[in-house]
Image (tube, rainbow, N blue to C red; front, side, top):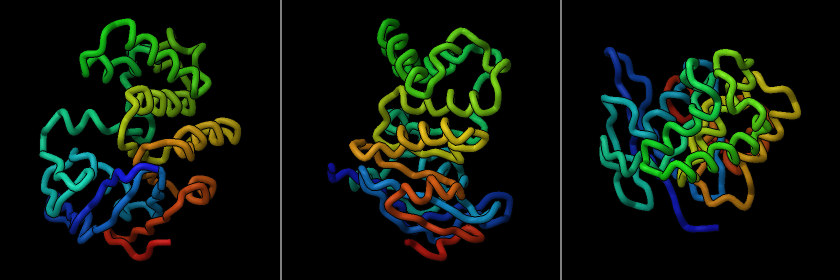
Length: 216
């Protein structure tokens, strides 16, 4: 296991006059996945977005290996892989095109983009959907395309929001194995109330009303 770490220090988010996160301080190490659990509205998704630097009105700091992440720095954001709830895909593009987009944005050459995209789709069991439009896929398939897109870039930090939603037992286990691979050097945060996901993580952070109420 490497010594890489992602830290939130007194992190807070206020939007529209509402406090969505307050005084969140925690550390995640590479190879030690963290589950974020709690009822709807507890702040799980907001915390993932704040860690990724995707929200305005954020107080406190996020540090990667002790270095503050600069707001708007695309070099920092390229280190993150994000699985959005529901996939967050472009419905008018194919599975492969969706996976390829962030790789193309990083300036990788065409052959590497194609290779990584196909390999990542195969890893989630969707190599046969590469040329199908996302709008023609089931909800579970779209979720797996979202996982493939996040992993294709070999991220240093993986932030996943309900990645097992809508998945059948077989594909849920497949996705959990990919995201929580014990040999992985990724820093992993997963927002989920799925008992299988939480049980596979080394640390469980329980949120309520935008605050940490316990850490197991």
